[in-house]
Amino acid sequence: MSRPYLAPSLPAACGRRILQYLIAPTESVLGLNRTQPAGLSVTSGGNIDTWECSEKKMRTLLTLIGIIVAAAGLLFMGQGLGYIQWPAESVMIDQTKWVYYGGGIALVGILLVMIARR
Image (cartoon, rainbow, N blue to C red; front, side, top):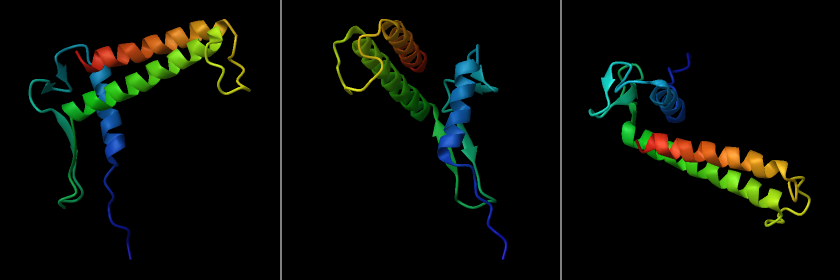
C-alpha cells in the first residue's frame, strides 16, 4: 500500500510567506497585490486539504514573534544590569555585555513588530 500525499504543514507555508513578506521591497509579493487577500494555498491532490496563510495571520504571527523576541531582549538587559536575579545560576547576571546584547535583541523584536504593522 502506498503512502498518501501529504501537503506541507501550515507553519512551513506561513514561514515561506513571512520570508517573502520581509524580503519584498515593493507593494507586491511575488506578483500578489497586498491590498488583496494574499495567501499561500497548498492543495493535496484535489482533496479538500487546502490550507491558506492569509496576510492577517502572517502579521499576527510576526507580531507575536516580535513581542517574544523583544521580551527576551529586555530579560537579558535586566539580568545584565542585575535587576533580574533569575535564574540564580545564570551567567548573564551582573554582566554588562548582556545589557548590549539584550538591547540589540530587543531592537530586533521591535523592528519585527514594526514590519508586521506597516
